[in-house]
Image 1 (cartoon, rainbow, N blue to C red):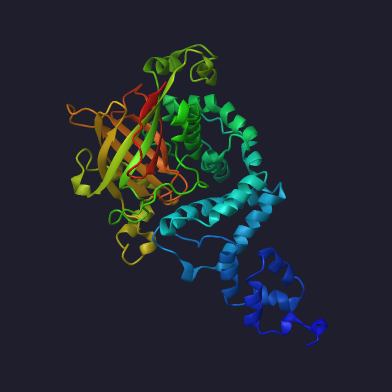
Image 2: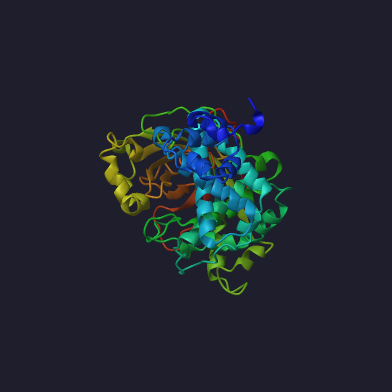
Length: 465
């Protein structure tokens, strides 16, 4: 055969698609521009064969919709691949429009959350390599940290717009991935705003019945501005822990999986509640908390300059939590706990309707999970824990749990409320707020970070001030 006269378009369509599946998606896009016939072969075929193989060969995890379900048989592979490649082009290409940036952020959220699902399915994720390239080979980190955190405190309502919530959310997802050497400028910017975050987190005006004393909007949606402030405070404190304590931390989405047992531990435990957890709790001395509120120093109360005082002290406590899934009827403290949650009473109203028909529509099968267990700190004293996890309309799980520290009290003394970051079962864990269960005026509040560990993990608990 005269090779000089060979025309690939003369081959059967199935064979052309088979050849193209081994090419880079950008090369396939270039091929489609060589003529109308090539364009039709690539973009106008009814067959998903080419796009499915291009997607999987590029190193992406299948687009999971839950820890248990893969829609591989119903996926629009062309749309999924084009969305990811468009985001890659924008992230590598530099400045983009606001709308393009929003779409790129949404794609990153999907990639990170699908990565968590893939780890549950098979113990590893193919998305991680792509995410590492974005992290290390683009100006993405510089761009997201060039936009300051939204300075919202006190009685001012957080800006409830998609754009203002996306930046704090993406920075929260990437917090743990910051490298002290490679990402030094971003890390310095991160630490430089630590006191601003402290001023927000310890401002008692940011906790009230409207936001359920936690990082939520009045409508029940997650307040990612609040979440970012808490993540910044806890993570900065962890970095200052002495010795190897600083290595005891939640993993980032690019870290290798640490929890080896990914099997379902209890029927209906879609959030992976059952098991052993570590929890960092940060708090101020009550005298400092009072001074922060009433002091006239540093240009008035709740000013970030307050935390620059050499006498300021903030404690960081590492706690072990062991949880088991229980039925709602086994709740001891709060039989109506479910109805008290922001995600169930507001943000998840429509989702709750699907609970009744979860057998028919398993994709929406996220029934509330009730749990109980024990929590202990460095002193060895155990506290009783009881709570619930529900799914919001935004597919962000909400956690609420009560803690009874004294056997002489008939009701719990503390309540914690938070949101899962990084998707369902994400190893990054849950960030939220702890405060008193009574919610009395001037009761303290602070941030916590909860993440899952293997059952055999060392119980080297600590408290550092």
